Image 1: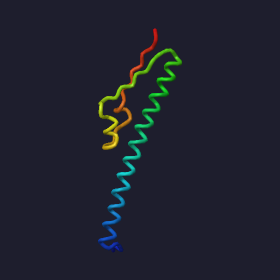
Image 2: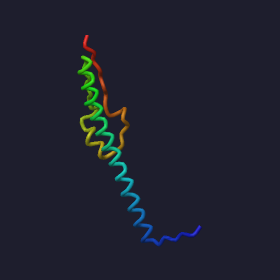
Image 3: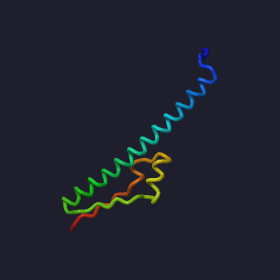
Image 4: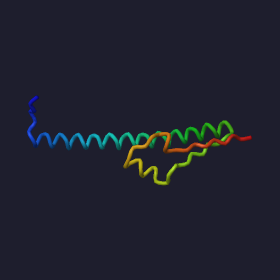
Length: 86
């Protein structure tokens, strides 16, 4: 298969691809962090209405900073402990 891309165009396309992949990763990480924060607030409100409390604790102090630098799984970022009023 012959290539129709010259070296300069190929290099430019590779740069664009790298930038887009980086942007995609950053957007996904930001969305996950914002979604987790909103879910935390919602759970706290629901538990207050139900007479119990939810405490969401970051697993690491730098978890929000790490969100911008590397992907994380939803389940590993927050530890959720529920206390029922008794």
